Image 1: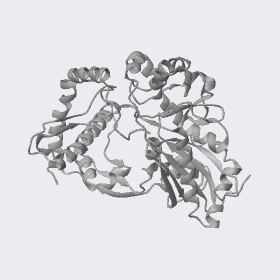
Image 2 (image 1 turned 30 degrees about the horizontal axis):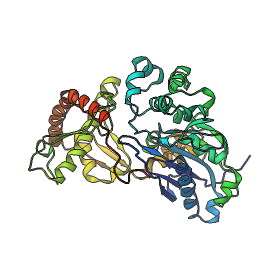
Image 3 (image 1 turned 90 degrees about the horizontal axis):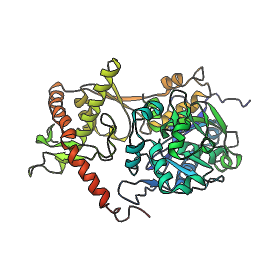
Length: 440
């Protein structure tokens, strides 16, 4: 068995909607090196969002090479494991040699509204654990089945991003249970593929990836790949999870209210609490006195009020008090948005110190496999490696103002839904062409 170095390092990859990032992390959670390569987003029609799946791998490998290239020989020799986090729900069909049969359809793609209405039900929600919504891959696979059936019937595998990256790294078609469940094809009570859901999607069990639990060994990186990175030692790939889950592991000028300008931030449908695949965003209360700053702040306030509503609903349904919030991601770099979120929720918010928090979550999973913190459990590694920044406290008076705004905003969705339904039918009849340059 390979000896674990006294001071192990791990590689963590976060392949997201806009880019792939790789970081090299030590056992304290400190990031020693990183690389990042963009992924081009294609939008062939309004509401459709795709990637070239080859970009998932090429951006990942280039990012790892950049990060490893910043290390000295001793540091490279200390790299002991790697793990991946990724954009959940995105998928593509592949031939046996890994060639994509069509562009990858992304988690935010909205083409499958008809399939959501046709197949979505309380029974499917209970079986899959996924409300009828644009996000799960289930309904978009059903769209492919009905509109491009050959893409599925000719596929050797239909894979999420994690599984495709693992295949490129190791030659094994395998993904993490924590990644595959997002496709909406799981019997959530058994955490394995459901024949009922596979039939709706138009795929077979044989076309699905092998499954392992997060934190478990999948396979070693192929020698020819790790040698390109200047690594002589074997490099195990540890099953990761989706970016939101990994972020959870790694986390650990205008007056408020904008003079009555309220934003319904449903740019790409809405999930909780309405689960409406054809909902649309709206600005309500616009007047000539409002400027760009007011619109910008209203957007931040709309998002924050929705978050507060969801937190309050979660607290009510579970009976578990939510007294503090951990914040992560690029938005936390904005003191303005942190304060708005804090005031809207009425709860202190502590920002995570690491910007690439999802990648850090993958690093924690990989580091746990080394036993560097006394055991191989993910919670132990997370406790040792999660790092936090400043805490923002709520202002009671501003929170009260946002509570008033939230009561008004909460009435907007139902008030305009009949009109939005008519707008959606109109847009289906007269679809908007993709903006110039949106797709290559």
